[in-house]
Image (cartoon, rainbow, N blue to C red; front, side):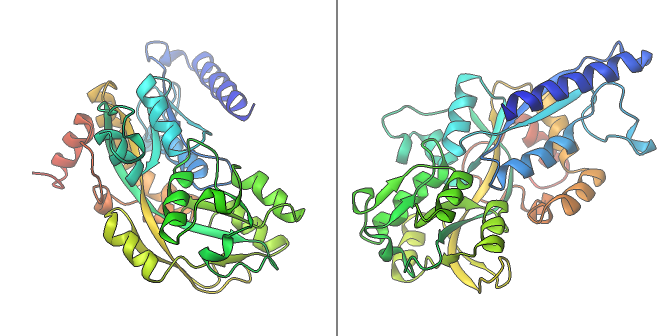
Length: 336
């Protein structure tokens, strides 16, 4: 329903703009979809922010007059989705032009390894940019007695929905600490319904992989409180050594109300696209993403927006760049 309302709203906006400005009749309106994640995570608001940066519907005021500095005629749409795996599968099937995903999932998909082993390579997957680090957050109900990953044994734990990168990483982390889904009362919920269950004392903990502060976790900690469980020790060290896409991370004290400094690990959030998308269009999208107007929007729009920078746009990318993106990064000197 949310996706339908968003799409209808954007269609109406484009039609109104087209009717209201006689000079735009010759300008073709083009839609570009960005698959994100659940509405309680970080992908969704960041997707909306980036869609705003790159959109420039017919009839918009010129950039130099304080209007949109996006791609002329483009209407970008951030769509709520199940996350990394679902977005990649949607790109592969042509349901989406682009989407956000974790760096590990992107690499496995392109190479046909890891969770994509035996499912075939998604060799049409291309990168637009690396965005920001995503922290693996293990959120526990107050009074649940969960102080470490091992304490999840016998507990009611949500691992996120099938198709999410969170589910992939949750399984990896459980294995590292000598656990599996069989050791838990596992559920497969997005953060928002998971939080509802925690509030009703029907769930003990849930995993979420997202940039902090994460809206759903902010809401939980500021309402009934919660604990964030550290993912650290020799088990975490072994994970980082085994999987090059994991890195040490720290959630600073005060990020969430009543929660102190918490050590964890992270992966990179990346924006990926189908190789079948027009090279010139992707070039214009990347150019719009990194213009001065977009910089202002990113800095003001979300806490993680400040971390989305041109200087880190190529960090941790393990799949080929889209030719349009590659062309732009060569122009600005990031590639030879």
